[in-house]
Image (tube, rainbow, N blue to C red; front, side, top):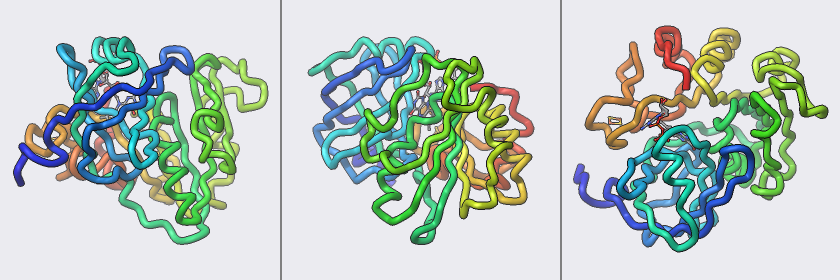
Length: 266
Ligand SMILES: Cc1cc2nc3c(=O)[nH]c(=O)nc-3n(C[C@H](O)[C@H](O)[C@H](O)COP(=O)(O)OP(=O)(O)OC[C@H]3O[C@@H](n4cnc5c(N)ncnc54)[C@H](O)[C@@H]3O)c2cc1C
Ligand code: FES
């Protein structure tokens, strides 16, 4: 493998827009000079923020030319990214990872459970799978109501998917009052052909343990540095897998030991 060419080399991308759509949550739209291949849902890019850091972000939407990312401010890298406005340049490396790597059957019905900024890759999943005739119901849980944004407005191809909201501060009156796991316990998961969960490790651990017999898919987050299978920093404990080349989506049985042994809470 030549690491200096193709998707593993950093390429310039121009900021088209970068707007705050909820508290500390931004949509970044980029126009890359060249895209090596069409991204798949759950593929991620390393976004190089000049002079600060390189951070992994999942693709939230793609229109054939421009890439959209949804990100939450956490530390220096995301803070610096939020200060980039129209026509500024960043670097991108990708698409990386295997993406979703699931082949659902036509007309099947899937439940996606997202915690917090775990929502980021879901609009592109909904858009892509809709074209294959697959229906997605989304259960999205956040801590406080000010983290919510209107998914249908920002990602119109999500219209048609049922969205169930859960807030821990209980301020959103048309949804569940409690955690996403509380809300999940009120849903008949057996009516779905498949389940994908993404969010903080604490949430993923409970879902993987409680729904173990259904072997849901789990989209993990680990520390990604090189993004190309060299450094080993994204290693999934008790497995032979690397998140950056094998993931980020795994079956629950593949990552249960990693989740059990992990005390990291993203
Ligand atoms: C495959 C993948 C896809 C991701 N997609 C998204 C996304 O679409 N939207 C989004 O908001 N966030 C996403 N993240 C998390 C995002 O990469 C981190 O929030 C970001 O790197 C934090 O950088 P920082 O400099 O702002 O914060 P820092 O102060 O550097 O770190 C804050 C916390 O973020 C986490 N973190 C920091 N660096 C990394 C890293 N290189 N890899 C993984 N986690 C890190 C750690 O838990 C750390 O404690 C993704 C992570 C991975 C691994
Ligand atoms: S991030 Fe370096 S091996 Fe995965």
